Image 1 (tube, rainbow over the protein chains, first blue to last red):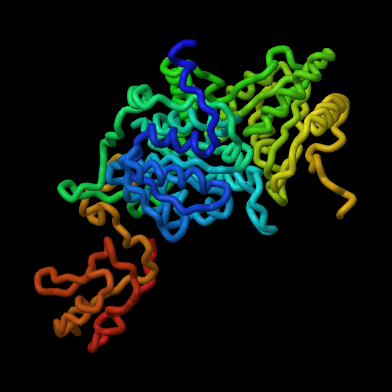
Image 2: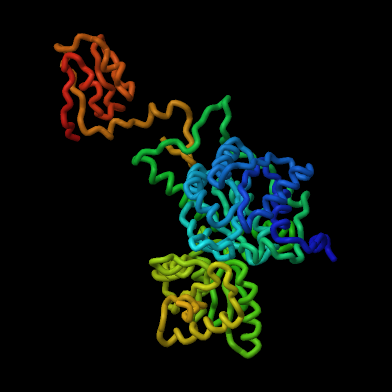
Length: 397
Length: 85
């Protein structure tokens, strides 16, 4: 067993992520507990109390305060961390814009959960997809290992002097936060080599006074937004570079912006993000064994949305099915809408159909995946339905 | 002047950021009527009324045209006039 494959432990997803955060050496952590994120910050609090992590751990009155505190900390040059979910992320909404607009590179794990009402603590991705336009980079993890690795990568992306943009590392609540599975915990020294200390060019310093996020009138506001837009374009390159650098140091790589599974010769391609990828891979194995050319495209980076990479990766498909755990009520859903818009002005005329499934913690099964593949195949001739609720229980309506 | 990402600005940025463009009405001072009581300078919420060669005048780079000065003037020496731009 090589050095790179040792140190594998069976741990809870939340612990694994907390351990990864510890290896990132944040100077300030500020968080408010909320299911299913709680274990992440509980573990971090314990690490600070035990002296394993030299960090200022702030317990605050709300998620709004948690993230607001970090703006000040990050502007002072402190590497800053928080974690939240669902209603907590919703309560941060105003602050999310302030963070991205002030260009402070905060990293936050989002333990994806449904947003009430009705009250529901289980997993879907409505919370983060609903915050897709706030200017944060969003990376989605398939499993605990990816959540661990993406957390370390996130700081390297966020703190790049040309990017300076906050990152949400999204992991499905319970499915990943509460699962126990074997994980390569990060090596502290390798992590330090990979991610040096945070040394920003500009900080809040009484000796050299400066304002962050100053008032911008109509003569400059557009240009500040454009700079954020441009930073996301740069991040498209940086995310891939960091994933490759990570591979050199830690020996693991599973795509930068996106990853494929039996993608090259696939006729039907399923596009999705998050932990449902595992189930889809199993379903594809079954279908491949009987000669069905089905493939998967797993999106890692939802913001920035990798239009060119998606066009390239999906150019050979002859039908595309998007499955996602969010709904844009009054429209369709985040991923399918973005994918269609990415293709509209390209030469690709492949039918794209969208499925909402797994809302509020409902399991997405292999049977569900077979169903969407059948519907996608049928859409080659004529699209029956562009968008539907896959697992709708019509009998209780 | 180039902007800095994150809207980072050095001190005294209000010297660069002029806000008078918000104005609809502009105060016009009749210096014949003015008794130099300085109430306009005291009450101006922008602090933009100042003296130039002994005469009280608003700094139009910052004056929002709120008409507080005209309202406070005991000699009705200030008239608010619709400004055409």
